[in-house]
Structure formats: structure tokens, C-alpha cells
Image (tube, rainbow, N blue to C red; front, side, top):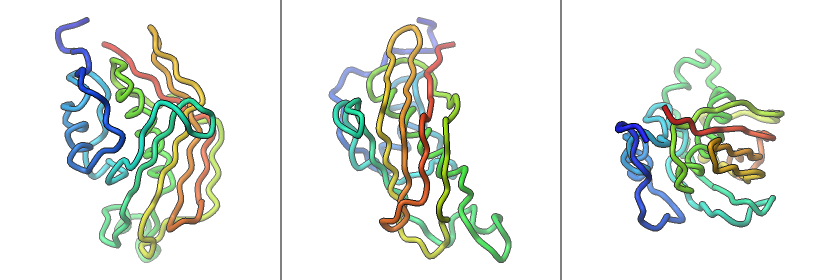
Length: 177
């Protein structure tokens, strides 16, 4: 393994993560240098991971649940769009990819995460400043841990309990330099 990459730490995996934990992941401290990292704010699109497990979920391959507290002063409302504020749908989709990459790092797989694509996305409503909380659900369908580290998952986004986005076949891989 190149010297700028280290193996993930050995401690037991947690089943939930606070905002401070997510920031540590963004700084490269959670899974080790050269391994999966979350983006730092403002691109970090959730405030906490409330559940993560390698079993269960809709497909029995693992799941992740996370939450994002919506505030009217969030950066994207001021520019998207002036006089008609709405969270860009691509940011909710990015949050789902972020969670798949986090899951792969949480499993202990080495490498840096990159989104590879998505099969199908449906937006049935929008995130306005009046929304209080988003809940992200990611259900892993396939996890490959070998020379190629790949996660394929389905995801949904709920706004105040109402499902507003659905994504099928989210694909994220971890790459080593």
C-alpha cells in the first residue's frame, strides 16, 4: 500500500455517528488517511447518521439512515433561486451517494470514494425553507470488497415524513491511488 494510504482503524464500528464524527470523517480522521472521506460543509448534506448496519435493509445487505436539519439560512436557498428558494435536487442525490461511500469506508474497505452513477431518479416534491428535517434511507443491494470495492444501493429522501425523492442503483466505488 502506498505510504500516503493507511489501513482503516481497527476499533469496533459504531451504529450511529454525530455531526462531530462526520466532520472527523471529512478531515480524513475516521477511516484513516487516503480512505473514504465525507465532504466538509457546506457540501456535507446530513447532520447525523442515526443507524448503520451491515445486515438488514430492504435487500438484507445493510442499510444507512441519516438526518439533515433544514434551516431557511442554508447556503443554497439564497442562490437557488432568488425569490423562489428550493434545495437543488442534486444535493439530495449527492447525500445518498455520500452515505453509500461512508458505508463502504465503515466496512473497512480502503480507498477514496467516488460516485459512479445512478440507474433512475424520481423527484416527486421539493425541499423548501419551510421543511424541518430530511431523512435519508439507503439500502444496500450489492457490496463488493475485493480489488474493486463497489456499493450499489437504493435510496429515498423524506421531507418531514413524506417521501420526495427515490433513487435506484446508486453506485459508488473506492479507489486506491
